[in-house]
Length: 140
Image (cartoon, rainbow, N blue to C red; front, side, top):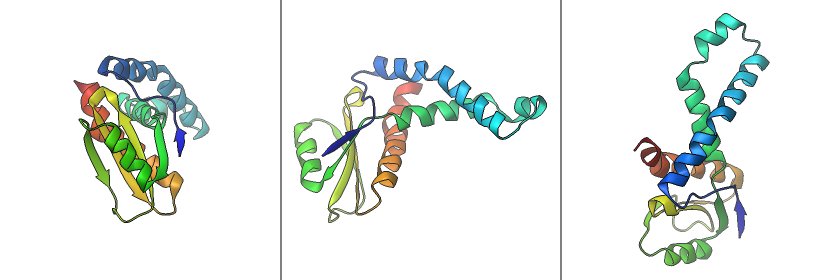
């Protein structure tokens, strides 16, 4: 098994703190990307909206979520270790590899199976975990 990422918030308050802390980074990333795309000041004001910066913050948060990559039996061990958690699975049950995120803040486990494309599975799972678990937690 391999663990990637930086955090799996234990509480809703911790998730909100992490999310809020990423606001300035999202602004910097957005500004630097706009500069690299050679936006002038007028185009920047027109195109880089609050929604754009919020999307960058969402993506940053999701990309930093801790995930575990392992085999199907490893995933089953993780599910068994969290018997009261809401388990959300994507993919085919006969596939050998899996990636999952344990979200203590929401008592949820989000998982996906994959065969070959590990990096794509990790990125997709992080986005799914953000949408399925953290969006409501952060909006609430």
